Length: 66
Image 1 (tube, rainbow, N blue to C red):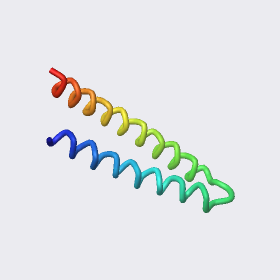
Image 2: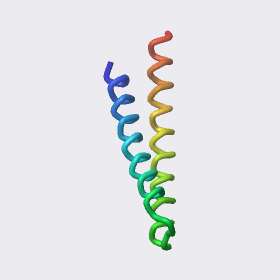
Image 3: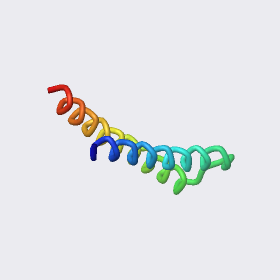
């Protein structure tokens, strides 16, 4: 049960991170070097977090399918 809740919390966090990223991209007509590096960092962070969530999900499914 813990893994399921962890996955849900992780997805909610990703939703917030992506929402912030989208809002930032929509509100700025031009980007500074700082903006570009921030958005690159945030995008990598989201990708890394999603990989972690995928591993948790795979472990959860493997455990419950045995």
